[in-house]
Image (cartoon, rainbow, N blue to C red; front, side):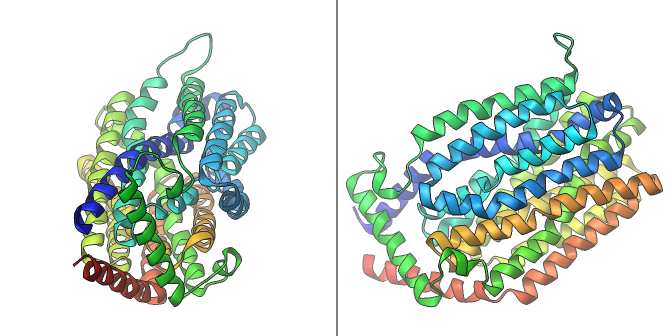
Length: 446
């Protein structure tokens, strides 16, 4: 079999084996993280929570996430991704179920904090894991494959969560069943992950001998060529200039992203009342909006790989998202339909930026250093998930309107674009390494 055919068959097998399963795991993680937005439609009234209390509880998840993200990733590089993914899923499932029984604000804050701590390092663990099984030129497409779970969880979770809000069994409210029933799959997948995944290429039994050897050779060669440009340990990667700038840019992005995402059901409910749309109907509408974001995410990931460019893809997506977000708040009074159209565009932009952004760290860092960098970027960035929802809730309680909050969220995403495009330097060098690696492999195969 020639080198090109070997590359295609191996990449196809890796994708079929890993992406659907990791997609399923991640979709459950995101569902258990953001279903709080739908639970709020009943929970806030039942428990007497204000928008500020809800915003703080929704955001405090990311404090637990921040504290344990880097330590968790360090442990993962020591014991292997397989065991760590399994541990994370089982732990967060148990805590997600306990969310159904909170009664007081302090219980709500505690449960959300622990849920963040339990899930910490899950995402960087998966990015790191995939980077060990793919050539660099396929990273954005591979990452987009399982990251479709982010809009996918919302596309599936919107109608599902609004449906679960309507059930009341055994004197337990719909919002409580929402937490319980959406957490159970994580328990099951956590056990399966331990037996299904392999820690490294050498351990796999689902590749032919020549495919396995080809993949070992090409990933080893790429790792060595990247290390010639910049060879870091786990700890050294945490102090790299570009890693820190990527972290700051991601922080600003996540302020806007989670600020709108956590409150989108509440905002949409207010808009839906204008056109007499039922809660279930709103769920289906939100599901469609997130489905559109999935389509855009696939397109942007493929286009980024094709053009071999990352930063401008991220910046354009975030800018479009920010502008559409602000426009949606100002057309809402004149046209609810237009407001939903621009909210959909805002979601598409926010999600479209994910895959090219997360293809950047593995393009210039390898091994434990890549794991540490991804963890730090995700950790600092997701602190924006604490500030975004809290600021939105606070401003809404103070002004009675979401408009000022949305302007703030849009500005934070535009700031993220400027930071990434004008301050990050390393990705350009990394792309040259990618091109040299790919050219070298083609010349050898020829």
